[in-house]
Image (cartoon, rainbow, N blue to C red):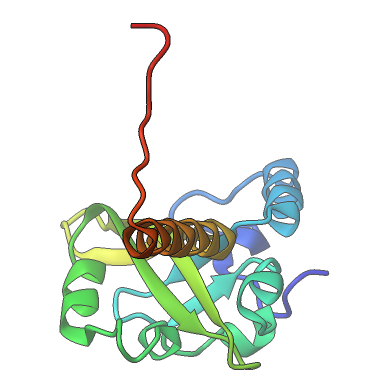
Amino acid sequence: PRSAARPAHAQGRDPGGRRPHRTEDVELYRTVLDRVTDVVLLVTPAGTVLWVSPSVESALGISAAEMIGTGLIARIHPDDRRPDEVRATLGTPGKHSSRFRVLRPDGTVAHLHSQWRVVADHEGRPERVVGVMVDDTATHERRERAQAEQTQLELALALSRIGLWRHDLKS
């Protein structure tokens, strides 16, 4: 399914008022963006979501239509929210990356790795932000489980008063 609102570039126009895109290019981009599993976003420098790929529903539990027009900062977990830092980054041309959590409507937490580029106009002013968010929740949960198992093993060894040796047979 495609999101209800499409940014200018997906309608065959460039948001910066430059040359129009070929119809074949627009259809190719649309096909790719509608099928990727990572969340692709187009955001204003102020943080308002202009467009988001349909994959946002499986990653964050909300539809693309619900996300469009909302503030990106409001979606970030309250403990990870740093509005001034986010606004400063969204207003700085170049490539950026961050990790943060998002609260899903069902109360679960998604761990995301986000990479984005702030695109500037011909005068160097931030014009738009193009980003990709990868749902890193499964990897995060695996790391947490491995750490918990390691802690349990260390505690069991300490309480049992036995030792554990490792020997590298290759050396």
